[in-house]
Image (cartoon, one colour):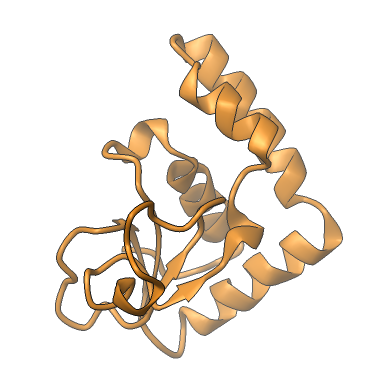
Length: 128
């Protein structure tokens, strides 16, 4: 069993399980009833998205240093007790079922998904 880290809106992989949208906003121009059918997500989970301020910082991170600063700040947000417990729950679930976490960004290396991946691995999650 594992957690898949995915780009929302891309075709689902076999056995991926339910998708959790770790994004600040739902997809624009898509009816809520179509989110799952169009491979965005089954459940919206904005708790694991960066704050609105950090989203803007990530979008403008045009150097390795700027990206590292974003990652540091996002890790700090995810260390809040509620966020930390949510990550612990997902890490535990990864040993019992498949599920997927995703965002819209095309490149994981410049997306908060990369930080979520690292945080989950640090908690012992099975991550694809």
